[in-house]
Image (cartoon, rainbow, N blue to C red; front, side, top):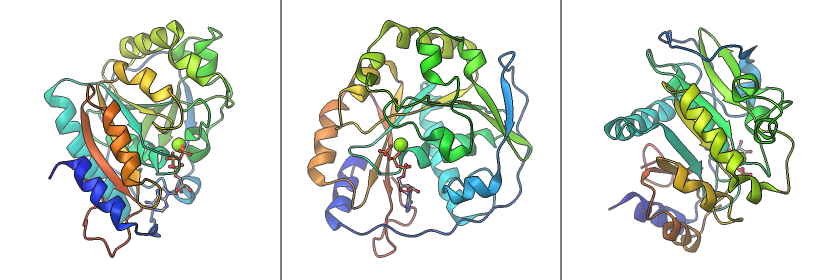
Length: 269
Ligand SMILES: Nc1ncnc2c1ncn2[C@@H]1O[C@H](COP(=O)(O)OP(=O)(O)OP(=O)(O)O)[C@@H](O)[C@H]1O
Ligand SMILES: [Mg+2]
């Protein structure tokens, strides 16, 4: 059964969200990488991360293991094709995209000889900075409108001995659709490719079905991770997304917020 079909089955089951417990811990060391010059450095607070369900900064927790397994599966697919850009989206709002994107980026950043950049391209509802506890000043919109180069807007976020790079969102904008389709967005993506060549870049996107933002940007992505939320995404929603996903490979479908009553074991496919 392919992954979208499995997601449809789980959406049909209509299970309510599961509550999870998150535990902190310690970490292995990341490998050396060529880093863009002049990035701001900030230390992340483990308690703030855990309070926002960001757990993959350390080994040892049950929830963190889900993200490590997801990370390995996603990277195996991406490495086969030398892909760098991964879009994280969902059919509708609140499925867990931002939580998944942040945890995946952290899990990748913990690997030796790997590094990750997370870019908040949910211009209507940017939440990456909130979840990570980072300032939003000078975020993605200041790069798009030419105020600062990407290297000045990116933050090097340290957690334990590891770090990930973050291009946070700015204040929410009502002009997201125009920005997503703009030449300046193309320039931002080109600069990202150039300056973060050795990084896996994870883009936290808005929901697919709440506007054309995702449809605009998808052709510029190498692959998609589709996050569906049991109780958030209907079968019809998932099928509607399928129509827009025929040209960009879907590396995995995460079925998030699955209760223990549903036999998914790891909660994603
Ligand atoms: N596995 C999970 N179990 C329970 N709650 C979760 C889970 N994953 C995320 N959540 C919670 O669901 C809410 C939405 O999560 P998140 O912000 O990641 O979703 P989103 O898809 O990015 O939402 P939006 O469409 O608004 O951007 C948050 O309160 C988050 O803590
Ligand atoms: Mg979000």
